[in-house]
Every structure is written in structure tokens, then in C-alpha cells.
Image 1 (cartoon, one colour):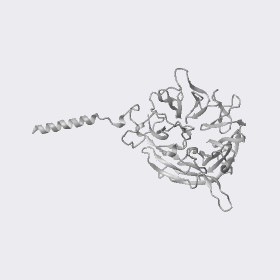
Image 2 (cartoon, helix red, strand yellow; image 1 turned 90 degrees about the horizontal axis):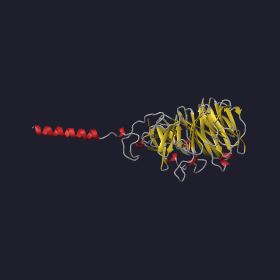
Image 3 (cartoon, rainbow, N blue to C red; image 1 turned 45 degrees about the vertical axis):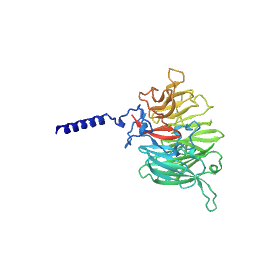
Image 4 (cartoon, rainbow, N blue to C red; image 1 turned 135 degrees about the vertical axis):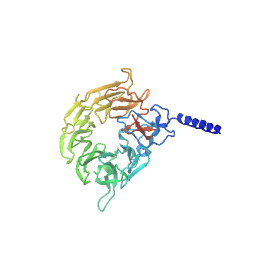
Length: 422
């Protein structure tokens, strides 16, 4: 009778040994060879890492086609980079806008957990590549739509903006909607018309509509949903510290920096005329203003409350695109170089130039919370935004947008969300 017991014990030990030798999928390291398409256990949660050091290909999730439709070139690259994809990342969800609606995607499993549609027909056909990202405003996400205003009675057809506030909480339905009639140029313009939700604070949301040199900005009361103010000719680019700031069209290709009261639209300050001016947000209360034909101090960081210069940018960056990392650093890409600038003082922190110091500057794809993500000769890299040093952990992919939960990666003309790792 002892033989059967001995055999049973031997089989039990063999099963235990074999089971113990199979590694858990979640034990894989960032540098593992796990294929993005390989089967793996479903992830039930996304863990925050602020900022992420790497991104996990095993848990990637496909975003709707609207995220990239009409945006990629023949090389499979996104025109305009990742900052303008029509996606807002909020927690473990993605709000993906199109000319006719918005979908809410659960980034854990890719399921659509909410959806809202515009109440009207799009103003322009084939406008997918012109939709800008939605805007987070408290517990709502603001999504503006450019629509055709149908004729009514003696009134001819025209154009309008429908601003829809979609709740961030399930079931992600519209909290409110409002419409604003647009000027005639929005209908007649041969240029592409764009609408942007610029910012929201202190009960006012700012929406800007542009087409070539034409522009108009609106302040909308987020409680009553009524129109508070209109600024014809102004392209607003930033809100902060009770102000809306932008560029006022003065004459062909010439603009004036302008600051208006966020609640009333009353003009508070205006700068000098600048030919071919550009303005971008550079911090909570700062904008960067530059132009190709101004003096040596023409590339400046301005205080949004006064319009006065806080600092002058380092030389050689006037034509360079700079991205604010939503912390304290601007990362600029002049030609084949990467330069980091303190967003408060304008002081250059470091620079990587092609052929210098034995390092090759990466192609920057995203900057966020003190990190620079991109691609270099050795593959995907992540740098410290304050020092330029390579971080020790390889990110495995080069994301276009980053939050503490995820990185968005372009692959074969589609956007995927990759879980963040620390």
C-alpha cells in the first residue's frame, strides 16, 4: 500500500516544481522582449508614476481612429506632433474628439465608456485633421465643435460653435451645452477654420476660432452658459491669473500681444506690433512671444497680468519650437539640437548639439514633468529636463503625450496607450 502513496507524493512534487518554474507575466522587466501583440493577463489597474521612466508594451490599448485620421503624412508621422492630437488624457481615461463627437476610452482595456455627439452638421468636410484637443475644466471636459447654423425664418444659414461640457465621471454625459454664432468670415473663408478651447478658470471658459489672419475669441460663463464677452481679431492662446492672453491681428501678417480680463474681456494691456509674431504658453502666468524681425530682446517671456517681460530667451532660439513641461522647464528644438530653458528666468540650463560632447541630440517627441522623451541612435530615450542627463531606465518607446498613467505611441498610423512604469 505504500507504493501508491509514494507515487502520489512524487507526482505532487513534480507539479509543484513545474508550476513554480513558470514566471508570472507581471514580473517581466521594462527591457523584456515581450511582443506588443503577445497575449498577456489583462491589467485591472493602471499605477501612477510621476513622471514615468518607461512604458509597458504588454498592456497597450488601441485608441479610436479619430485620434489620427487625417493627421499622418506619407512617412507615417503625425503632422504638428503630439501636442495637437485631438486627445485629452485624464486619469485612466482618454477623451478623443472628432468633428462630430467625443468618445471616452478606458485606458485599462480600451473599452468605450462614454460618448457624446454634436447637435449639428460639421462646418467643413474632411475636417478630421483640424480638430484640437479637448480641455479639462474642473469636473468637466470642454469640447468645441464647428457646425453649420441652418437657415431660420428670414435668417440665412451661417456657422456656429457648439461648446459641450462632458462629465469626467461616469456615465460621461453632457453636463451642459451652448452655441455661439460665428462671423461671416467663418463661412466664406477659403482657409481651414479651427476652434480651440483655450482655458477655463474662475467661472469663465475661453474659446478661439481662427482662419488665416482672421480670429475671434469668446468668454463663456461656465455656470449660466451665457456669452460673457467677445474679442474680434484676437487669437487667445493662454488663460491664467484672471487673464486671457493672445495675439490681436493688426494688419497683414502683423500682430499685437494683448491681455484682457478673463471675466469681462476688458483690455488690460497691449504690446507693440510684431511681424509674423507667435505666442505660446510658457507657464501658469507666463507666455513666450517672438517674431523674426524684432530686436535682440524680441524673444521674451511675458507676465500675463501686465504684459511686461519677465525674461529674455537665450540667443539662437527665436525660430525654435519650445514646449513647456508643465513644471518649470521649456524644451526647445532648434534644428539638430535640443536646448532646455528655465521657464521663470529664461536661463539656458543645457544644450545638446549635433557633433558636440560625444552625444547625439534625440528627436524629442514629448516633455512632461521634468522629463524629455524621444528617439536617438540607440533607440528610445528619456532625459532629465533640468540637466540633460540620460535616465538609467530605457523607456522602450517614444511617446507623443504623457501623463502619470500612460504614454501615447504612434504605430502604423494609429495611436496606442502604453501603461506608465516607474
